[in-house]
Every structure is written in C-alpha cells, then in structure tokens.
Image 1: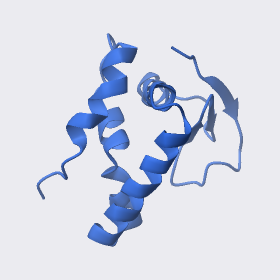
Image 2 (image 1 turned 90 degrees about the vertical axis):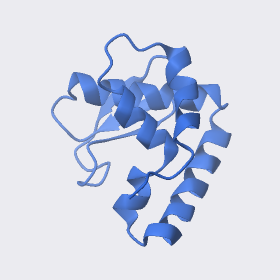
Image 3 (image 1 turned 90 degrees about the horizontal axis):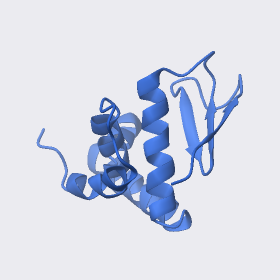
Image 4 (image 1 turned 180 degrees about the horizontal axis):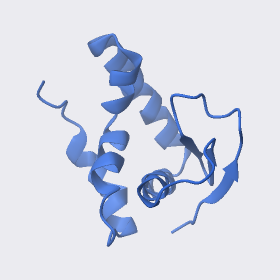
Length: 114
C-alpha cells in the first residue's frame, strides 16, 4: 500500500483542520503531526488507493453533501462522512492493517444514532 508524502504548509489546510490528504500527499499546518493524526491521514491514503482515487473523492463529496442537507452543519456533515468515522475510530490502533483500513468505512454507512 502507498505511503503518504508529508508536506508542511502554514496556510493550508484551513485552520479548523490540521491536515488534509490529497493522494499521495498529506498536507498539514502544524509543526508536527501526532502519531494518531498521521495514522488517520494514512488511513485516508489507503482508502483512496483502494477506491482508485477519483471514486473516493466523488463518494466523499456525495456523503458530505447528503450530510450537510441532513444536519445543516458543515462540521457535523464532515464528521459523519463514513471515511472520516472509520479513520477516527481506527486511528488509535497501532496494529492496523491496510486491508482493515480499506474496508472498515463500509461499516459506517448507516448514520450514527443521535
């Protein structure tokens, strides 16, 4: 599986986010990413690669738009994207495998109970 290329940039991504993954790059605005933040972004690299990159971005956008309509809150819409829910739940696992990261998001297709 691909390994991310990490780039530090002071002005990107926007301040409410620490990092963004645009295959194969992880762009961050912090001095250094924590181990769990790096694992979170690596999960996104693996998700993107497993879905052949472009379909990942199309699905990500569709999930975000559907969530935005549902929740009417951009941050809630972001947090409820299945790829994000999966990455946040898996980022604490030190023994994570690429295969697990590539398919786990499917478990998060149903909205969380509020």
